[in-house]
Each structure stands twice: as structure tokens, then as C-alpha cells.
Length: 250
Image 1: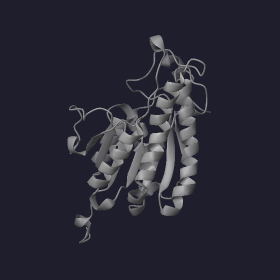
Image 2 (image 1 turned 45 degrees about the horizontal axis):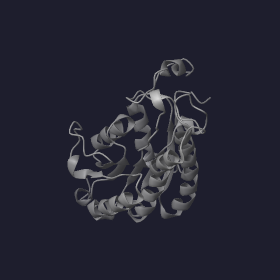
Image 3 (image 1 turned 60 degrees about the vertical axis):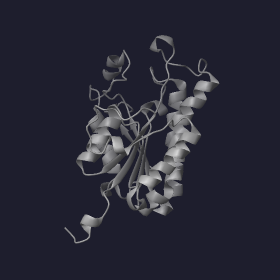
């Protein structure tokens, strides 16, 4: 250990959508590697989440509301040690359903729902990245946008607004990689397929039959790739979208 290493602030991750599924697995993956994890969601910190400093490093924010998001950005800046943010993972997303849990088509989705979905799934990620750009640049940080297999093909369960917001986020990732790269910030995305979380829809087993690996992915399998994209292992990976779906897209 070098004489100065103990004086260096811990690497810091800002994660949206941390309370369940992929987000929760991501918290555990980074926390176990010694990172400080700052979480954001519209809910208070869940008491059942056992990571260190969880309540103190949780910020309640409505990502659909731009004023709330701006206020959260200022709060995050105040909490960062040395003004350094090493990683931003934009994982929070909403996928409204029709009555009975059915998918909302492009015909059935109201404009209000379109705007709400894009507010959380698309506008919040770019607002956070731009608002924290100096802190990311100071740490030569990494941004990971969580897209979806639904962003590149019509999905039987994901609604039209969710799917198109994820397609837009994939395109935004490329634009950000080009724009942020000169500042020393890498921007990539991951596109999960059918992951074994609490939000799986009935009928998923029929999709599993068509996946070459014949199984669902686990949240930790996604979190491991997110971790790689935020560390030196992927130091020359920029503007990529990594498919995590067992070959479902081939």
C-alpha cells in the first residue's frame, strides 16, 4: 500500500433504481468491492437493504420531475468526497401496464404516460450525467445506461413507451460516448433480456424456451457486467451496448 492510498476517498457510485432486482444486485456487487454507493429513488431508503451507510447515502428524488432531479444533483454534489464521482449507473425505469397487466401499445398509450416514461427512462439519465459531468471528469469516471432487449425488437410484455425510451437511451449512449469521451468519461450501456426479478410477467416461460441457453439470467450476472464497465478492466470500451440475454437476440 502506498503512503497516500489510505488518504484517497473511496470510489463512489451513484445508482438510480437500487431497491430491487438488477439495482439491488449492483449495490451488493460494488459495496463488496469497497465502493461507496449513493442511491436515488422516489421511495425512502428500504430498511431491509443491508449495505453500509445505506440510509445516509440515499437520496429521495422523483426522477420524472425535472426540478426534483436538479435538486438531487445539487445534494449529490454536496455529498461527494473531493468532488469525485467514479461511476453513474442509470438503472431506474418505469414500464406502465394496461388493465390486467397487459402491455400498452403505441395506440393505447396516452401522451401523459409517454411523457412520464420518457421523463424517468430518458431525460433523467442525461440530466444526471450533464449535471455531474465535472465530478465524473475529475475521477475519469464511467456512465452505464441500462437499456433493454425491448429497445431493439417488439417485446410481448414491454409497452411501446418503455421500448422506445430504451431505444432512445441506446442512441443517447452513443452520442454521450462521443461528447463525454474527450473529458475522460466513458459512456456505455447494457441491454438485459429476461432477468429473474420480481417484475417478470406471466408467460415468460414461453420466451425462455426460445433463449439458446434455456434459462433466465440472474441480477448478479447483470451487475457483474456493470461493474466491469465501471472499472479499469474496460478502460478502452466506450459507446458500446452489451447484450446480456443468453443469446436471445441472435
